[in-house]
Amino acid sequence: MSTLLVSAWLVVVVWQVEEHLRVVEAARSDLRNRAHEIASTLSAVTRALRFRGAIFQERLEPVLNELVNNRTNALVRTGGLNALGLLNTDGDPVVTAGNTNLLAREILTQRERWSDHYVTFVLPVEGASVSPEGATNPTVVIPPFPRNLTNGGGPRSRDFPRREPRPGETSLPGTNEFAATNYPPPPTNGEAASELSPPPPPRDDNRPPDDRPPDSGDRSRGGNRRPPWMRGMSDTEFKALIAKRELHGLVLAMSTENYRELCQHDVWLRCIIAFFAGISALGAGLALSNNARTAELQIRLVRASELNSHLKELNLAAAGLAHETRNPLNIIRGLAQMISRQPAAPAEIRDQSKTIVDQTDKVTAQLTEFIDYSRPREVRRTNLNLTAAINEVVRTVNFDVGEKKLRVDTLGETLTIQADEQLLRQVLFNLLFNAIQAADTGGHIQFIAKRTSATEGELEIRDDGPGVPPENRQEIFKPYFTTHQKGTGLGLAVVQQIILAHGWEIECRGNEPRGAVFRITHLKIGA
Image (cartoon, rainbow, N blue to C red; front, side, top):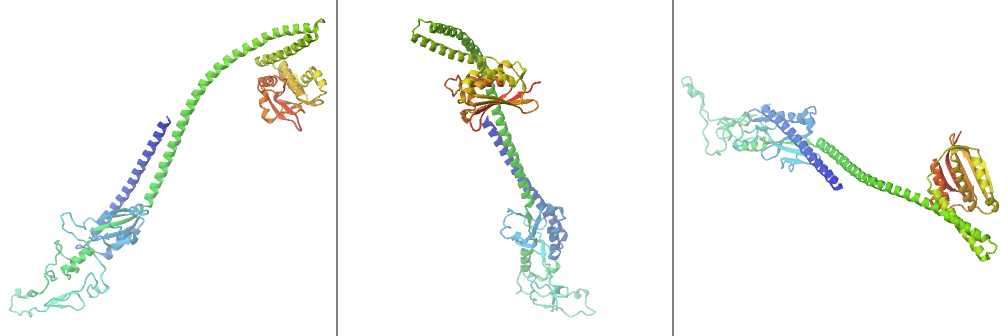
């Protein structure tokens, strides 16, 4: 059964582990979904800001900063967005916002990377990346122009290098534009209107094939017309700009604090469930074990009851045998006394007859105590004067008291208790006779009665004998345990039996400075 309970607990533990893994994966999927939602939002923003295939960086950066820093946004607040970056075709950041330390090059080599505190996702930007057919729809991020652009100057940054004039062109002062110098003179009044159009500039055969003039169409290989601010660039410069500034992907760095808190909370929850499952399995095991022990104890109780019944029958049989044995012993004792009293009997015969009488009396006394111990105790309570009962018992042993020159005192209060008169006198006689045997010549024995409450009292029998060793104070109430050579070991056993039948208690203690004290408690006070 214990193996089955342990197996059930292990099944619960495995189940909780699987549930925890499912919760972890669900939490990760939730972060992924939020990342895709942010990517979709940013893709829509890029499409809205796009103009002729380009987005000004000065217009895009505030949008990215707003996404990262605006905690009122539900996507940002719940997802914990810490950094955001737009990537080119080479995977390098073009525009970033937030903590740029989270956008290191080694992080961007993986589409999804989890760390202790952050997770990064590399996602495509919809509508701004390479299509599956290979055609390009480039969205280029234009870096900030120089300040002199609005004052008639041209862009002179590293992304827009100034080119040299071609043959037949002259540079316009303060601009990045060129004008042809080999146009014919203005037409006269008689010339045709068609001749008003200037002829195309002469072709320079020494010009590189990839270097196209600004008015030759300015189309990229993908078929998109270049924006006006890019028409002054050669194809090589335009390709370099696209390779460096074209949007191809998106990287998001999101905090995993909520994710870790959720996982930790779930771990504690699963541990608590496993702990209580273990406690339940242990409790079930203990309950089953207790049931098994209870069943075993019930079986043993039934056997003990049967044995007790058998012992009662043996006790009655032994008591009957002891009673029947006393009759032959009395006959033997009487014959021995007759022989010892005959005048013609030799002295040796008389001595042997006295020995027979003494041994017969000893065996008869043992049989009497055995019969008293085995007799069922039926208590018939009456109101008795405890002091009077003590004095009557003391008078019955005056010979023994006088022989050892003992002093017996009855002290304390005069109490009337509820007890069986015959059984109470037997208790007092056995305790007094035990004290007489223990006391030395000229010793002192005391009976002290006192009230302990309105309904109960107690009685102490004190002597100044050698006392009872502490290790024997519980054993002396067992049958056939005695420290006297002439004792039978049943006197105190009979006393305890009678006291328990009355509902009282008895204990043995040491008397200071020497001796023993037998204390009877819970005596019921009578009217």
